[in-house]
Length: 141
Picture 1 (tube, rainbow, N blue to C red):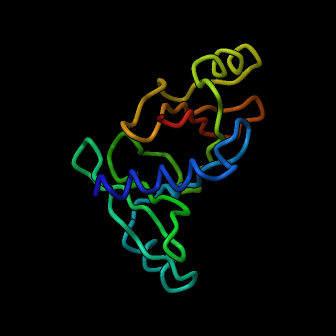
Picture 2 (cartoon, rainbow, N blue to C red):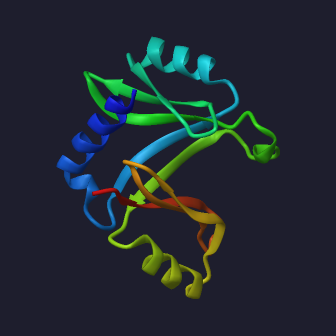
């Protein structure tokens, strides 16, 4: 399963979406992963590879024609009470810490502390001044 994450990272980093300022990843946050997987499998044709998370839950990588295209993140724990099911987009940034500092000065709010996902990258979840949520990520090297 770690091989799936490594393959996803390698494929993603090979493309221009990992350039600073480009959208690089999309993620469905849902309380019913199995229902979401069935929906996108039956309507879009996605296949899936599981990726274990540090808290013993499973992140689901979605593939289209063998390429990683999105993720499905379970929000079925109490920390996500009140968080609506939705799609989350991520922008690639050259230095997430420095960019978040600029974002905060420009009126953004940090929704959770910046965190690292080994083998994936350093991530910030922000609420921009207009109120929209957005993820910023500096990919792991």
